[in-house]
Image 1 (cartoon, one colour):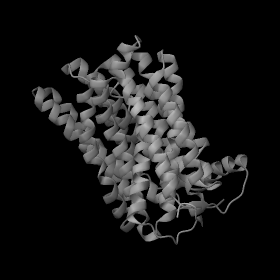
Image 2 (cartoon, one colour):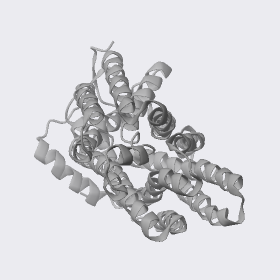
Image 3 (spheres, rainbow, N blue to C red):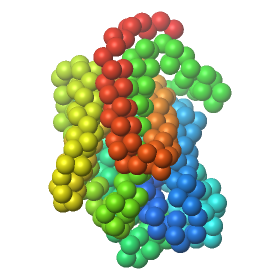
Image 4 (cartoon, rainbow, N blue to C red):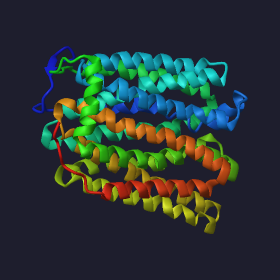
Length: 403
């Protein structure tokens, strides 16, 4: 029952229906911060602004997400996550509605920041799944919920590119607001109340995050490796629409369709979770970063191919690097969720703060590099960031858990 009060522990079972509900909730909420990427070219024209200014839209959205994760997601270790999900869902609905009715790009920038902050309800859903799952199946369950989250990220581009081209970008934000509101109400009805055992104050909660960061070298390494890998992920997706328009004359629907290729890669999440349950998640994360590096490096072959060959290569690269990025993420989550069960919201908040700082940097760097150096400059950025993540993952961490 949704009204049941359930203390947090590792002894819960979780039904397939609940896993599906959590996956859908994570997907619809996090999709909100990616709808704008394939629509940037259309938004730039309709609001009569520059490419550099419109490029701040995804940057501020992701920066807002990072801020929300750092300052709001830790509340899940202190308050009932079911209530937090309801509050954030309503706020996200309002922010998406405001995005649809703005009259200037500057208003859209403010609304985008709020969208990013409120969309962190997805980061209340993932630790909830980790708490409800038996310890022996935690990687599998987290991987399944992350599949929903990652499909939301990638399929949002398919949907928004199509809707923006044929119904207008404002329609996309209105549709998104309705979907988030519906999903929020379903989650409120379906989820149990989860009562945290700790009762510390909000300032102490934030201070404790610094102590967790200091205590666990595995957390620091996972956050840095995933954050650097996220630079390449975000740089690719935030520049793809502009590159396809300038080099191939293609519209936002085509750019969004590449999300289908990325979605195929996102299906790695449950498999990576199962592997992380059975093997060292550090090894799975290293292999995943290596795969992403290879996927980006093959894009240097584009100049040797005809137009259709170049597009096919882009699609194959998207499958491979999304597979690598998402497998790395689920492996790192499985790793940190095992460090200190009572602190999972804060551990997840620290990891995803690094992820979305990386994504914000990737959006800004990607747009700047594309403007200054062209698409091959972007490929150098993508490959270099992925390789750096693999190198970070190869450095042995010091397993000292002293306070």
